[in-house]
Image (tube, rainbow over all chains, first blue to last red; front, side, top):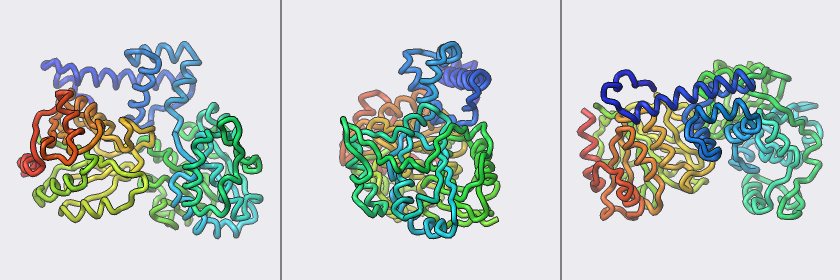
Amino acid sequence: MFYAKKTLNHIDMDVLTSNLEEIEIQLLLEGIYQYYGFDFRNYARSSLKRRIRKILTAEDLEHISALQDRILHNPDCFKRFLLSVTVNVTSMFRDPSFFLAFRHKVVPLLRTYPYVRLWHAGCSEGQEVYSMAILLQEEGLYDRCRIYATDTNELVLKHAKKAIYPLELMQQYTQLYQQAGGKHSFSEYYTAAYGSAILRSSLKDNIIFSQHNLATDRSFNEFHVIVCRNVLIYFNPTLQKQVHQLFHDSLCMFGILALGKQESLRLSPFQTEYEPIAKSEKIYRRLS
Amino acid sequence: MKPQLIVMGASLGGLIALSQLLQRLGPAFNIPIAIVQHRHRDSKDSVIDFLQRSTSLKVKEVEDQDKITNGWVYLAPANYHLLVEPGYFALSVDEPVSFARPSIDVLFESAAEVYGPATIGIILTGANHDGATGAVALKARGGTVIVQDPATAESAVMPEAVLTRNAADWIMPVPQIAEWLNRFSV
């Protein structure tokens, strides 16, 4: 919001600082886009600002313009920036009720296909992708599935490919796995070693990890299922609309779109072309 | 200046305080209210039902991109931060702030940035310090901060944390806060 002109006479320093920060952020994002090609200009400003301020503290800098200087002249600093603004902390079976609904409502539909392509957009460090792989394995579907797991950040993907997570999280994951309707003992899915939990390697068999940027890249295949949970909340309305277009372009007829619990199709230009199949879990099916 | 947004933060004992406050607001109260009430990440719709019983305003859990509309009371969903954008709400699943998600600091700071002096922030009962930093930020941007009188709070820690930071404009018991707010809604 700009109200500098009106308040200049009052020398309202807080308002002025706030505007200056806004200008600095715009310049920073523009510079990053032009130089590195990553487009954060349409990220939701409120949460992006918080993350940028955190980076400022971590880099021990006072002003965003100083951060801009460092990011543009030091690719390592940009890598750190990229990590800080794109990593979304999640867990295996986050929102277990979603996975439960997926098991009951989506799996029966998927059984009717000889071959299923899933796209997990914004997979971060892979926890939810592997959760899906476990679910599909337990339902006897995994062999005919291929999961394309994408993220904008290659470092995060490297981590995801390893399928190694801190051992101390397993207790929590076990609980969530059970709430999600897990059919076995969760400990069957990992081996503990040196304080880490290494996920069963067969889970990786049908997952393809690759870099894809929702803000700048296009559709790359046609899918039966697209899962994109708690990613759109980081985008502003313009970018959300654009990504909904991309999903629509990438989803086959009767394909499934799964969003985060507090997300909706409201900004999708194709809202009327979907029907909810698990409304409170935000699982939709494309009708036309 | 007529306030455009009221943000409230509450923790331990907050549900009772919130319902007491909401039930005293006039039926035509026309400033949108956004609430962070600390709660367990698995808590369900019962919080909404409970608050809805105390008011004729419409109470809802925020979905991403909800428009900020008069006559509504918005509650931060469990396990998400609630943030303010110009005219609408945004959410994030970023790590907890002040040990909390949703965090009162996050709501207050983002409201302060977008609505500045047109924001009223209210800190109610609670047993932690979330909200103090947010109240400081809100005051710095010209907003008004009201703190529940610690003597009347089930837990005085959270209101007192704001007072310690010198970030309060008013200290009042809950019924008086409601009365004070009603003046703006005519």
